[in-house]
Image 1 (cartoon, rainbow, N blue to C red):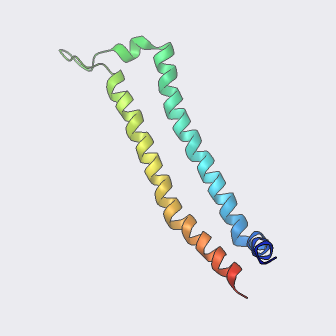
Image 2 (cartoon, rainbow, N blue to C red):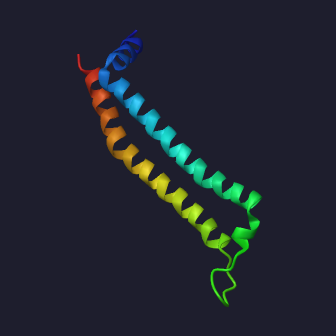
Length: 105
């Protein structure tokens, strides 16, 4: 079958293994980073409410927890943006090279 031959050529390409290894490692690192930020904030809420309840300054109404929560959201968006940029450039380029090489006779 032609499709099985194409898959075999893709899997045999050293660039394919590099793509899978690099993309997997990168996504795991980014996932751990997001989880540490998110669950760190949740654990802080659970175990140190007094810290989060401290006012930002004299006469201020806003507590420290509010900007930290916004920071969690902003950092998550930033990390997602970083991942998407790398995926759309480096990973897609390598993927295209692998497909072009596999389609050659």
